[in-house]
Amino acid sequence: MRPLLLDLFCCAGGAAAGYRAAGFDVLGVDLADRPRYPFRFVRAEALSYLDRLITGGGIRAFSLIHSSPPCQEGCALTQGTNRAMGWGRDHVQLIPDLRDLLDLSGVPYVIEQPNGKAPVRKDVTLCGEMFGLGVIRHRNFELGGWTAARPVHLRHRGRVRGWRHGVYHDGPYVAAYGDGGGKATVAEMQTAMGIDWTDVREELTEAIPPAYAAWLGRTFLATAGRTVDLGRAA
Image 1 (cartoon, one colour):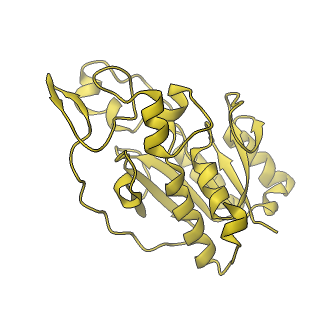
Image 2 (cartoon, one colour):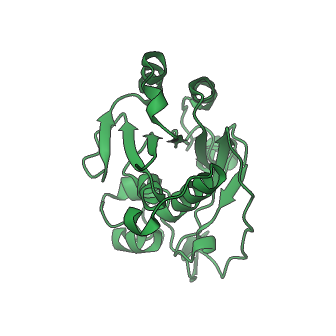
């Protein structure tokens, strides 16, 4: 039997696809309807759903919880100069309440966030260059109830392609966020991140590449002493 993973704030399933490749079955939860999510899906508010699982005992079915709470409150796009210019709106920071519930669950977990001021430990930082991808897309992961050795952060091969302060720069990576200014097309984002089941720009700009979650999933299973048939799981 494959271990079961709970994917909170799942969006379109970038993380889910990676965990599936690592050997997990996946259940996704998101407040918005996600018709392109490639696995079992529940539409619900993530913290309330997690609380109900804990209270009812259903949480015991899961071997690992992945969570990607909304990042706007603590990400670089709403901090510093951006906030001073009025570009950053007020956002609710869910991570402290989420962490309390995750600790209460007794299930090992992952909290994922981009670079910025979000209150997460940077136990592991992953980058597209580590996996030969066409994006840089740094992401930080707090690990609860388990540990992993920090992988070496490889030197980037060049710049992210696009316009910066009126100057166009070429480079081996595409900008998989926003729109305009030389940002990646939908097709370029799909190729760069290894995602082919959604062509919705908003979902692609919020997704983490499946390769990140595959690394996390395999590392967790190795740490937990679990073995899976990766050929069957892929």
